[in-house]
Image (cartoon, helix red, strand yellow):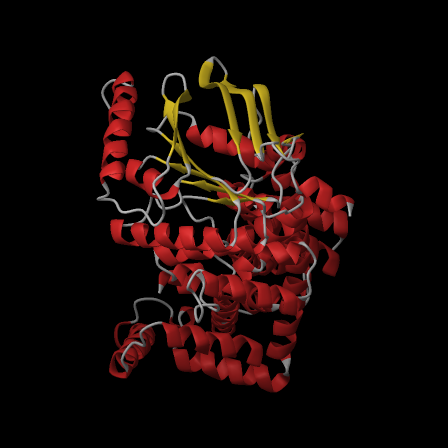
Length: 263
Length: 279
């Protein structure tokens, strides 16, 4: 089927290919030419202090923003607007408050024209995947922050996208919930592989999750250094290699924060 | 009717139920407030009639006189006929305003060029009290039903229109992004995100518009009508039947009260997700 040919990347071709992508808002340079190649089914963290353009880069992959120069290619084709094949999870959850948890997750399948019973079955499956079986009929207003983000992850996954973009998804959660969700995200990703791009400003979160960490520079936003994390999963935060890498990245990030002056 | 009561029970079950004695006390306080009001009214009118003769007793009948006037008016069938006449006008006029206000509001709220064109016109017309146009409406549409319906429609249009536009403007952009990343087309965004997000504010506009319809129908019936509650009040004035004038006012108050309760429970049902957010 020709459909499959487009979905499966040619051998050696990166899933997401960013070529000299830059973003300017008027005179302000938000992001200077970025070159990055992300393998299919890899887990990449974009790491840096606020103002480094990491969300801008994510938004360009999502199709919410267009690069002012350069190109963002997914499966070899330039990104043109948002698509159901690139799921997005937002820090502010972005659940539809008038839909129950189940109907939020069923949203993507509904848009694809699946039958009502199929929509429900898919939504139930993904809700139980994120540990929310039994909460199907609750409205987002009745869920805790961690539960809302679980629904949001289930909603993105229920569309079966090949790319999952996450913009500081655990940034608003408390430390305990955050670590639990990190572990669960890895568990889900190992079962159901996607190309994940995860924006964070937490160094330990990045080392815990990623195959590859892209440390970003500020003023202007750019790629500063790329780390490949080789520590086998599940990773221990007290592992000597973990601690060493954390210290190394911390020094890099600190230098970038200092460029911003008083914050 | 059963459709509106069932979910109300479901949401009430999720909130911590307020204890019975407290609810009873609340209802008791409300009744007491109304009784005090009627009491003051009775004391002033009766006292004036028999004790101190401060003003002509005809000017302020007792509550009993008003009830008696009510019974008379019901027996002749006059009251029912007037209520029906006013309600017919309100429903038709408000119906036109609701449809026009929501449709134009949605169009203006979603299409920028139209907003630039329409907004200044609306802003120019809005500060003019609708009553200023009443004599003209009578000239244009005659003294029949048409002028009253048009007048109500005109007056009620503004709150419905403005709140619809506001509701659309304040749709959370991150919800729009979320939906489009799930594959929503422009039409899907409108139907599944913009419309439900704007619904609370549209409903508020409809409620305000309905209140305003009642407000203006009485004035319209003062000027040119041969039926309706406004006509009843004005007609009673010509014959100096003060209890009947008060009866008209009381009936309008009661209808407004009942309609508001109905609209609020409809609102609570349509926006049950928002009740859940508070609870």
